[in-house]
Amino acid sequence: MKRILQILTVAALVALAAPLSQAETVVALPSPASLQGGGGVLTIDVDVLYAGTPAAMGLDLTLPTGWILESVSGDSAPQIVPPAGTTERVECAWTSSPAGGAKLTIKLAYPPHATTTHLSGAVLLRREGKARELEIRIPLGS
Image 1 (cartoon, rainbow, N blue to C red):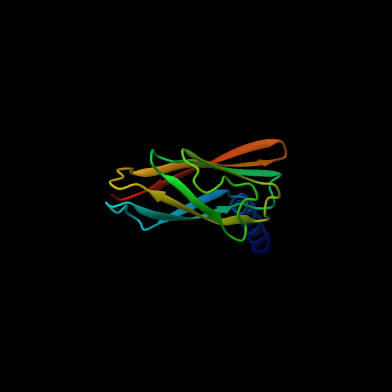
Image 2 (cartoon, one colour; image 1 turned 120 degrees about the vertical axis):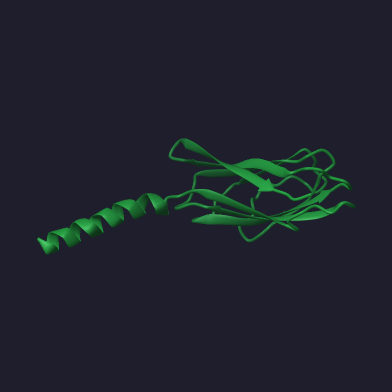
């Protein structure tokens, strides 16, 4: 009986762990955490975490008025990125999605007296004909 209970416990843990290993999340950390009154540059480190390799992947970040894209970089940065100087939206795509997740850095210039409280967007993952949108919400102090 004790052996059966051990086997059932292990089976339950494996069943619970499987969905957790498939978790898909986005973590986006801004630096500095709050905007400076005279304007400046905000660096956002983005980690997209997932299992396996999606068939397609994209990122879309909405920029407030007056904000400008400086760069998108990183070892697993998207292959398709908008040029420096882009305003309104940062739309990126991977032509070959990295296995297990992606890490990238987005640098944005923001204007003096910016009052934005957060940035928002999404990462789109497509696999097996199904799309999943992961929300990005980056809080900013002012």
